[in-house]
Length: 70
Ligand SMILES: [Zn+2]
Image 1 (spheres, protein in one colour):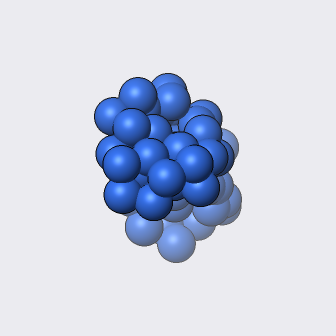
Image 2 (cartoon, helix red, strand yellow):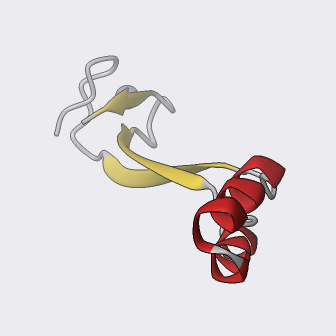
């Protein structure tokens, strides 16, 4: 991979992960309770803190610091 900025072909690939934290949803717990009883409520609790993780890969050029998408 060649850097589009400076033409160096010494680029490295890096992976960035971005996590969107989601707190315990009272709604999901209550909805789960209504639908499934205590088990559903526990399922709502289990979902606590489980965020969505997005992973993106970039090439990074050590020469000029340019970062670009794969
Ligand atoms: Zn570069």
